[in-house]
Image 1 (spheres, rainbow, N blue to C red):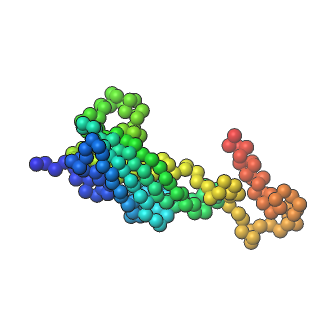
Image 2 (image 1 turned 90 degrees about the horizontal axis):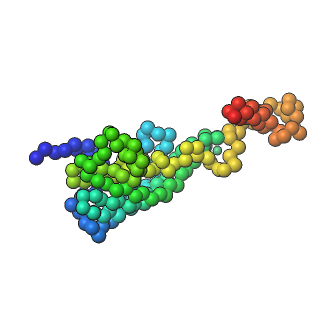
Image 3 (image 1 turned 180 degrees about the vertical axis):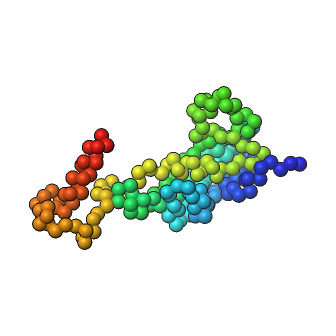
Length: 192
Ligand SMILES: [Zn+2]
């Protein structure tokens, strides 16, 4: 028997189709920091140090398998304003209907395929591999511009780089930050 792509041997979140029935089964996986590190390798995110969780309920309906799950993970990002570390505590649900690979729409149905690509996927062989789905959901859930706090003021200038009050005047708005605020104002105007 030809063994179809063993790419799956490196996968962590694998459901065996033969274990599934119409009433469904539950799985609990640990989302380890090693897994997170490699899943996030090409992104600006890193695991924050704790293991995450993946809870899954999978139910078979003919050849289709409905997978409903819940992911928690703590990722480390950089604040978009001040570059400080931000811990993102992600907690999200996923619902994906897996169909056999041979039912995948051809490229002529591309638009239709794209419409529901988040909630539809395909499996080959006898297992469903959730690794790419979990990665995708984590990346989509992570904010594009994470902030250390809603009112982060951005990079603060260390004391030694600040001009003395005499230069800009201590009574100017925000004192020493005034020149930076002005610069920011100008940049914002340019963006508009
Ligand atoms: Zn910040």
